[in-house]
Image (cartoon, rainbow, N blue to C red; front, side, top):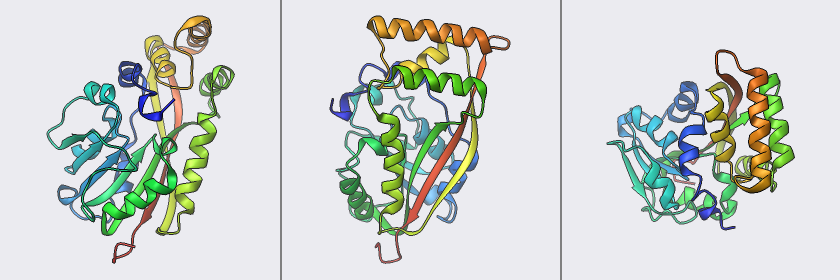
Length: 249
């Protein structure tokens, strides 16, 4: 399936089931770029706007690039977020027009080479690009058990694609001072949230016998680990960043 359409029927679950990102990760993205109120961000693959709103809350002007109409429609409005129907490979933005390009949970859906060229094109001299992923920290027993279910029911190799995407971003020769940072994150969920988390993943079954079996196992999983009606998924938020030179390259 074309990546643009993979989440068309999962936007509502995405809103309920997806975690946010720690303050320290947002701090790292903006560090050294000056007053956040003067920073223009192209947030590529913005989804329902989780990351866009976090950046906008710091004062940045955010251009939320999202090709999927259902995801854009599910986004909560924010006065400093402008939604644009475009892709990471062809943002439609002017050359040297943004200070930061961010891609949260989405770089693996892009054509890496084409997207990286586009990022460099739209970045101002001295600008920055960053790829951010929330990945399960399976040292935690509940998170490990959830991960085992994900691997058992997965319908494609999306999880490997994410790792490959990070490697491709970090290997790009156009970055000055490429670096990777990792931050601890947590996501507290009730049963409905855990089910929504699974349903928001395009590589897990949502309907049919497999979808029903997965829901049954999620019920059992939450019953085994819940405390006061909730479970906590532990996450590592990975931030890979690279800057462009003062001449834009």
